[in-house]
Length: 160
Image 1 (cartoon, one colour):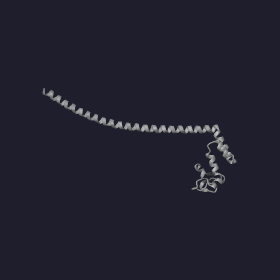
Image 2: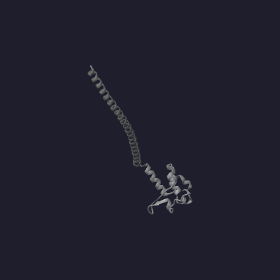
Image 3: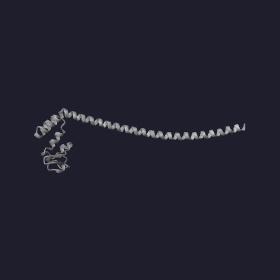
Image 4: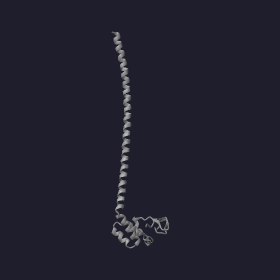
């Protein structure tokens, strides 16, 4: 589709992956349909790209009416999109993925909150250790003062 790239047609190996003689995968840039070469048009690659890019069923029907293979593809696409079971499976899968993502987000938030709380606790532990050291120091000072008071009382009673 892009003039800078090799044309995407059955003989162009660089633009496709060949699995068997009957199965290959081509990569088409749907944003560059208007740049289709004559060779792309000869192999109907531009029409297939337009089919995949169609926004309405009317567009799809109009494009599919020109080719029986495209008509089969359009019919299958319509049936798949209209099939209630498939639509419900798709909805359920999407819902499950959203719930899983929400759960993962919640877990990540909780991990972050837990890490913050652990940091706060570590800081409080350090503050408590510091306070404990201050109290031990004050207790030691009180013990020293109690000794001095006891000595002074002993002198007073001895001198009387």
